[in-house]
Image (tube, rainbow, N blue to C red; front, side, top):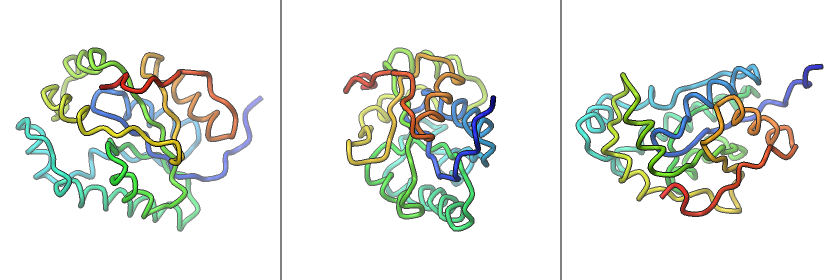
Length: 186
């Protein structure tokens, strides 16, 4: 028996580099039959060049990128379409920009131990984001607060399990517990 269609929603799969945003986001979007946007593809060339050179982005560098993602969220909301987008969304003020596009946006926060994140980044091929930027992302990370519509999931399970937990949460059910412990990703 298949689950009934889920009412369209806007979802941001967030977290630092190496947490599995793209993998989980693709699986979640496919499960729900919604559009998927890889947020990294919306970065301007200058941002990609900075990160590839090992230079962390500043808040100012991220503004245009966050604005593009917020516009995609707004368009999906206006059309009543479901959308899953990946975005690091490291700080609350970044998530506030995204909420400016779609006030009902929901966040799936993927987190894990720094050692696991670093090993994933070291094994990744063909991506511009070097592992050397992980410490700056971890330092900037502000996990979603209790008043934000967010689900925190540990990255240890495979993407399919994480997407299943996120889907259960979006449907209003309780996902399988992957407890978040503050500071686990720092």
